[in-house]
Image (cartoon, chains in turn blue, green):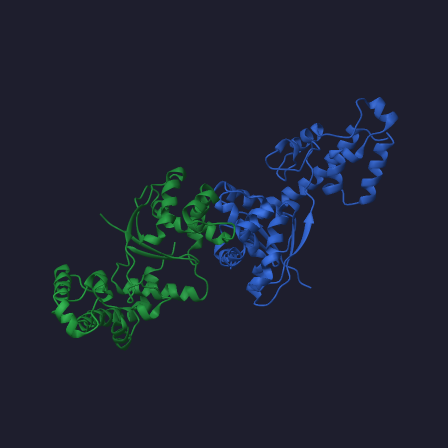
Length: 260
Length: 260
């Protein structure tokens, strides 16, 4: 079965538009097949998205979006309408192919409410309901929340230098003890450790190895410094390759950007 | 001073899109200069309008549109957002020229609320407030309301045949009396007469002649049949010329449709 991948970037004006292109380069560097991958930027592809958004917009009322998002009278009308735009890619493959195309939306859990509404109205406007799969949000290096562009010190970016990586990992929260002696005796706690989280989420594909490392931590056999060193190597190894591919992605943007 | 004319057609999907093109032909037939006239169709020109609509959409909240339009929880999100789209042409000339361009919006009084909101937020997003001029809505032939595509029997269309005109004017409400004899004696009432309204609004450019005819009506010197005959001639004379130009307009659409 042929699968197509469709990435949608939200409303993008001036500065955020260049962010969208930067993100697109990451997608390309990760090796998505240009034949099957379509990157949509809302403002660039609005001619394609808007007619679909209008169909959705007629079926959602303020009660619906209020109930789901907790909107009130002070919510701006752009936010109120936005679910209609976000829904459009769910129906685009069907429009383009001229027959029902099932769509799977992988999204952060925070985007789920939009697609709940989309599922509610899909069939009333003649489309299949989109299916959803939720990816967990990647954890922040301070262990308090999610990685976020607004929290650069606790987030590894795909454009970070090795020095950035060393510094951020050095500062990261761990499940370690106050002293090396105490940690050797009592062991660390990998369950609350941002380093272990990063390893688990992204930088170690071998689950056995993830569990081995956690076990060594619990036993006091692996101290935080050494453990951070292992993650640093994982990250740098990924970034080296990723940044090489990313630097070539600039010229390949046209292969991926959606053009009806 | 050079003036540019910009016409905007509302959200247009499938069938309504062809209505928009039909309306565009009327604009062309009326003799607007193609060099200075730009016809925008929301769905066709959304790539131009949407970035401006986003700026507006951030500044209007549900309270604002609720207060102006009487929206409630059952209002669909498309309607809630729509003022943002309708506002966009107010700022488009400034965007295109790269300097402040004052804009005058001639619109039906029913469209005024949108532009009230636009004026409220224009300066907060760095544009001049649009100025407004309201045209009265053309009266219906039954004297009860406005001309409307949904009331074809009481509306003269630019595509009507001469037979349509004869029939519709024949059926139109007048300010006449129950009998010719009574009307000759007591006179008619042009103030409530749809025929006189049509003459005044559209089909007689000479005000003196409009008042002369009204006076003859009041005096009982002009009966409804004859008066309707005069209007029929005005209408047919206009339609003959207009429909000739309109049939040529199809090929000239590209000169007028906005293309960034």
